[in-house]
Length: 187
Image (tube, rainbow, N blue to C red; front, side, top):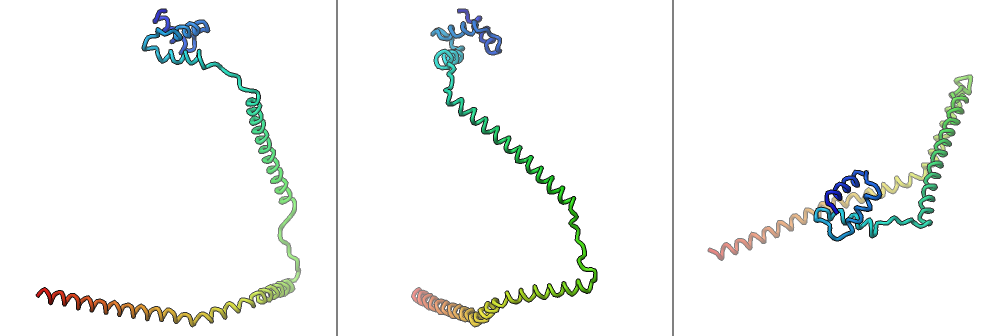
C-alpha cells in the first residue's frame, strides 16, 4: 500500500473526517507486519483497537447501581430544598408573630412608691437566699487559715539552701588544699 495514502488517511482520521471504510483500510494496513518505523506508534494504537479495544456492555447490576446512586443524589437534593423551604417558612412565621404581638414593657404599678417598696422587698428576698447558700463556704475559709502555718516550710527550704551553699564552700577549700599539695610536689 502507498505510504503517502496512509499518511493522508491518518491526517483525515486525526482531524475526525475519515469514513468507516478509510478507518478499516488503516486498520488493515497496521495489522500487517511491514509497517514503516515512523508509523509504529499508530500501529500500536490500531492493533489495540483491533485486539482488545472492543466495547463491552456492562452488566445490568452495574447499570442499576449507577441509576440508584443518581436517584439517591436527587432525593438528597430534593430533601435539602424542602428543608430550606421549611426553614424559610418557620422564619416568616416567627417574624409575623414578633411584629403582630406588642412586646413592649408596660408599667404594672401606678404609684412609684409602691413599685419601689415591691422592688426593695424582692431584692431583700434574693439577698437572703444568696446568703443562705453561701453559709457552707465559711468552712473553706477555715481551711485557708489552717494552711497558713505551712508557709513556714518556705523558710525551712531557704535554710537548707544556705546549708548546701556552705557545703559547697567546704568542697572548694578541699580542692584548694589538693591544689596546694600538687603545687608543693612540683616545686
